[in-house]
Length: 182
Image 1 (spheres, rainbow, N blue to C red):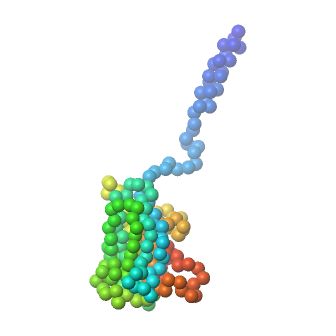
Image 2: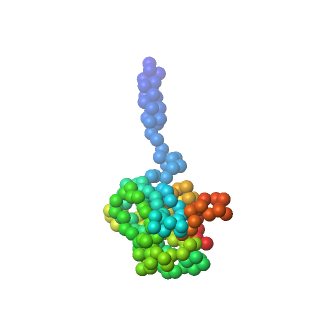
Image 3: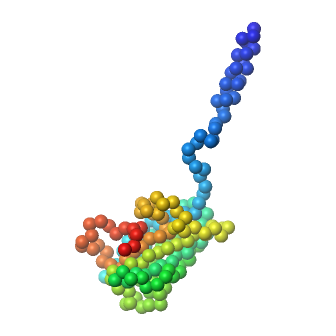
């Protein structure tokens, strides 16, 4: 008789322990919705041979859905590799997804130049910040290192383009818009 009494108690205790999960053993970190901007680049190089129609382009996406403002800055490096100044605010974007188009005219206007002042071989580095509704600012420095260095992650915080021939004859590898500047 005692065995019949202890059997339901034993089953109840066994299922009590089995139904509990120990979250402290979970190796994955808690997922937090962050501010991440993705840039799916479509046109990598600004075509120096067709300045009137040339552009750097891509789709800028707010993958987390919580970014309300995106500020894009540009810095120009001349055809000799010398910096021509600091980063200058080029554009502020408030709705996403956004078809980002950067033309030679936009770059010239940002620097107060004529399009004819831009030369083949110049490199334009873009640096961006995103803001959420609470005003929290995120930039390239806030990204995990693996995202910073892996071009396939398509981060939209630091990238570059060049004013050059669209398909240089000596290039075996496509232009990497996320590579470090020379």
